[in-house]
Image (cartoon, rainbow, N blue to C red):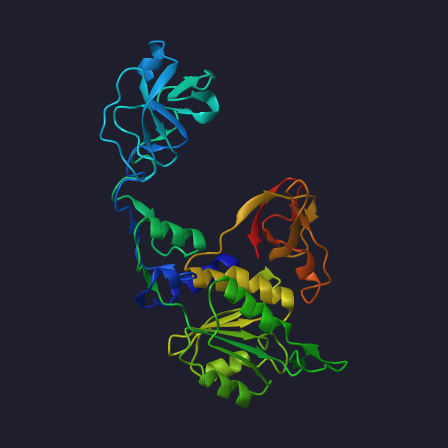
Length: 390
């Protein structure tokens, strides 16, 4: 048995480098960038009006001018070649380029317009260089904007478009095969008898993968026999990742480790000092495919995916954020204990009571899981602890 941290290190050292590809920006959602992206020019690329109003020379205002003649109207997308003269102003729209002869914008809310004049009526917010976004204040030309390996979300697509990246270089998505095992498992279209359960973990794993931008190439349920497991795994040896749910504990029909050994898999670890998820098995097939043997209980399945498989997919440990605990908690294990929590009204982590890792009601209430570190037997209310969102 190994620690949570050692398991992460072994997984990280076994990461398979995926090929790069160029993809159309409109199809890039859910991929990871294979190159960092730099600013192609300063942003903003010009001194930009941040508010609708008038552009003035602040010195004119200091000299006592309060009623300005509108010399020109400037709209977004247009520019002025003129030079602002004493007592005059530009009427300017949000997003427009501010001419170099103006240095301050007065908001419409602080003005009264009469005919071709703009009079300042509220003086408390009139400040030099107000309401102008200066050229390059957000980004300088050549500055790294989006780091290597960034997951492409809708907001990243917007940023890539802003930077003029029409065909980003990305890593191809890993080919993932999902297997569920267990003779007690039946499909959703079947009626389970009193000793059978529906195959909820298949849908849990595919939903988790979908959230991480991956659609499995194969989803299968296999009977608990060495022959069936061997045949099923052999057919998907070309996968980058194989997720096998069930069959990794200590029962007579927990045959996945045996079959993987027959297939020539290199064992990375079997059993991790965490609760739930202790039976987790991980190995590497001769083809380079990384195999995760995931415990069958729903909460164990969910926890091991978040902590380990998502880490592998992201090429870095699953990120956590620290929040205060809503109540005292006494540890009942010498392992790292990951327990379901929901946010209280005070935005603290409130533990959710469950009847073991097979409790089917977990998804109704939990916002994620929190870590009770093995080194701390007692956690006190308001202690900051790591939270992992589902």
